Amino acid sequence: MVAQYEAIKEEIEQAFHEVTASAEYILGDRVTRFETEFANFVEAAHGVGVGSGLDALRLALLALGVGPGDEVVVPANTYIATALAVSEVGADVVLVDCDPRTYNLDPDGIEPVLTERTKAILPVHFAGQAAHMRPILELAERHGLYVVEDAAQAHGARYEGRACGSLGDVGCFSFYPGKNLGAYGDAGLVTTRDATVAEQVRRMRNYGERRKYEHVVKGWNSRLDGLQAAFLSVKLRHLPAWNAARARHAETYATALDGTGDLVLQERPPYATHVFHLFIVETEHRDALRDHLASAGIQTGIHYPTPIHLQEAYADLELGAGSFPVSERLATRMLSLPMFPELTAGQLETIVHAIRGFFADRSSIAS
Ligand SMILES: *Cc1c(COP(=O)(O)O)cnc(C)c1O
Image 1: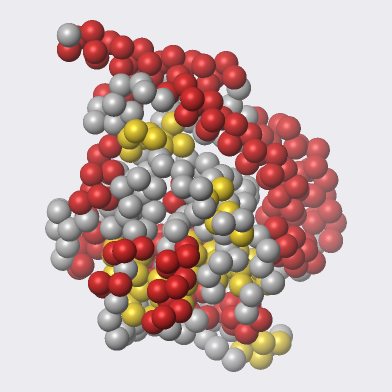
Image 2: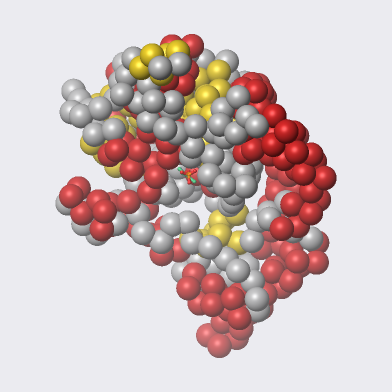
């Protein structure tokens, strides 16, 4: 992230000076401009900037009228924010296991859990690869359900050529600094083709205000600020090149690691254009590999070590170990390798070499 800042420092400083000169710190022209730019980027009619990715999800659900008594289908394998948004609007989280190859919500698992109370399906484009949206959208259509996309890891990702965030009723993005498009603080955005939903989110993010001091709903304070919007406009211009760099790094990893030890790579179905927020490998020896890489100075991540239903916060679901075997197994096997646009050929080589060395040592011990 430091290397990235150095590369765009002048543009960022100019944006900073423009906003401070205009004193439009909360909402304002720079926010409106970024909302339009980002909505265009993901081919959505409307974009509404909010305070975070969690708030994008929460305000989207509120705008669709999801609340107490309703159920929302959420993948068991996701960051906890996806589930928290549902809980925060007072609705019930209904978890579904994921596909063992793509790590995304398994469309076949949805129908069996639908009830009279189901109001929406909330697929996550996990790691930057689109969920299998066609069967999900068909199911939603057939049962009269909303589809809210958690696109927090999928800026620029595509499904059958269409941009993630424009496939469902609403798309929710996070600009947490570590995402493919990251602010210099917290920020998020809601995309939708529906002008009414966009207007609802716009009111809800700003104290329920329709016009100054005219409050039509009991809203929140979750606004995108002018500085973050200006920074995001600068960074959005670089995003296609950054995503392309990530894809090149992913090719390097995939080619170099193919057939190494027991490594399994995330399957990439032809319908999805992956933006590699994460590059995930699976191995039986995850923790040992992670330690080995750490001792070589290579930082890796685990996304995520504990599925939603096994988190203390969701003890009320009363779903113990064994409830979602695929997600639980992945939680013990998945490792996220270093992945950011500025990775150099030398760094990639070092990482690949260290991984190959790890498995070579193991097989010589075993034999
Ligand atoms: C990051 C993330 C969020 C939450 O975004 P914040 O901006 O941190 O609130 C939600 N869902 C997923 C899948 C994420 O990765």
